[in-house]
Image (tube, rainbow, N blue to C red; front, side, top):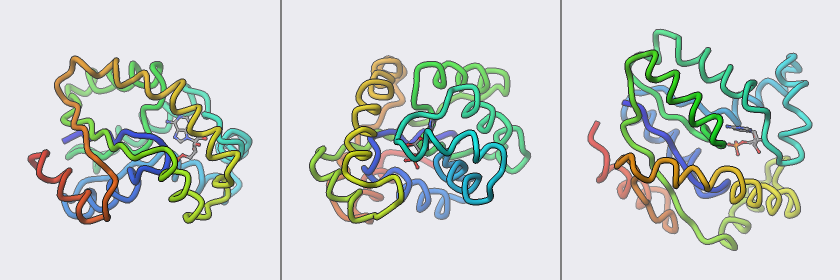
Amino acid sequence: MIIVMFGAPGVGKGTQAAILAERKGIQHLSTGEAFRSAISAGTELGKTAQSYVQSGGLVPDDIVTGIVEEAMSKPDYAHGVILDGFPRTLGQAQALDALLEKQGKSISHIVNITVDNEEIVKRMLMRGRQDDNEDIIRHRLNVYNEQTAPLLEYYAGSGKMLNINGDADIETVYSRIDDCISV
Ligand code: AMP
């Protein structure tokens, strides 16, 4: 079972991915979380990623896809994975397709969570993460619209897309997702 959590920053992808992973017993791979822990541990990866993450820009594709490829070659990922925050560019989506093809797998569902932009800004300001001040949030939303939203078209013909209204409490959004996936 390979689930891609999709949507603008702040729609609740990470929260829903964590609950899904726990309740379905599959791995949760958050590229953003991987960068945040590398940054706080001061690793080489962290040093490279730091300026991109703090400014709300995207880390270059080869670095991100390297992390995902490494994780997905581990045995505990054999049952499946919930990809949270990846892919975010066309290059990443193509790299994912190539990786899955090599592993004889394919995406099961793309969970596209949508929430109104102003509500997103409000939610992210409440979250209080270091890259969550209002200017950076608006920049991250622009980056999403320019580089990530076009993936909706890339996946449009796949028949895998689930459009989920994310404007509700956590459990309600979770049951909207759970109703659509069969695990
Ligand atoms: P997130 O936790 O998914 O909101 O990601 C936080 C930050 O990590 C993003 O603003 C990017 O700087 C970086 N990041 C996470 N995932 C990716 C990705 N797939 N491609 C490029 N940068 C990413």
